[in-house]
Length: 409
Ligand code: PSV
Ligand code: MN
Picture 1 (spheres, rainbow, N blue to C red):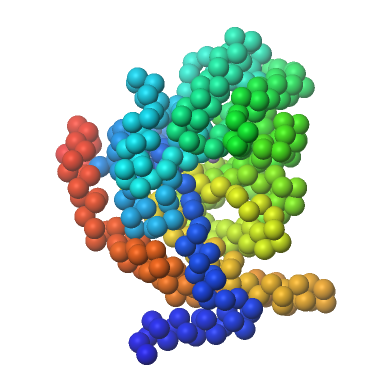
Picture 2 (cartoon, rainbow, N blue to C red):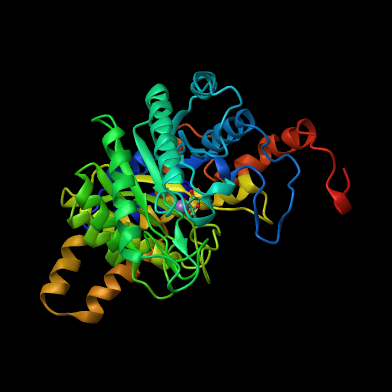
């Protein structure tokens, strides 16, 4: 037996002793889907500036090509999430976009409306005191729903970027009412088979208050709207020390966990490669999902990346992120659930904690390799397959964007 097969056999035995089937775990790994945000493959930056990347996507067509390449080597990224600020087409036509994506084996994923790119949003979009801006925001939401319908998209991912910068600037309760009324207008515009994912964020672009500041505010608003309004958890949108996995557990239990924006933070909304700062936290989040789903909760959670790749090549950053989520998910599948429940029942604090650590430290490479083989991917390591495939060179050659300053070109 060769070394790889021997490693797989040993892992299968170890998993079996935990009540986990190797084949079932592989099957689950092939079924995971992570939507790629169109905005992660173009150039992005900070408020201090944007570094340009050789070969970065310039148009919606480039973005689709890049996601198709990501899907070629990862196999679990079959949809591109859209943002109708940045993906707006000049002629308002979106069917050609859908056709182009479908021809490359991709679907179009969650639709994100705008609320921050225009001058009129200076005091906010839907919670602003200015009635005309609120009305324009509602028209924009309705247009996004119309486009979603045309493209077969079933979810709107709503980040309300509104807030205030100074105490006393606006009436906080009045803002809450404007927010709820605006979200109701959006919710009511949805078709019966569409969902609304409401994202929260404690600060930025405003720094005194934001209108949907945490998961509680998002949940409260969703509860008022109806059962198809659910909370979107962006991993970067928490203050230091917040226990995100507990938020996930509570939302699942309430049937209000809608979607994730994966990324990692060290200080604020850093939008770094997910799993790069705190892989144990990522594992614990996925562990809650696996545990909840085993209990029949939130079967249809939508996963997306929401990252900015400012110094690393975007596609490489995205690939490594997808690999990190896939690995964390594999480890979450490797938890001995019966032993964990028993340890918890026995008040065995260290024993219970150790069961999670054992799963986290399990070498799950054979599971991922088997899943990737089953999906017919070019290799067991997506990043290496990408580097070997020549796509980076191809887009660097083809996408002439007029020079990169001191880097030449
Ligand atoms: C805001 O920080 C956010 O997380 C929202 O999801 C936006 O749509 C996205 O980032 C794009 O920057
Ligand atoms: Mn986000």
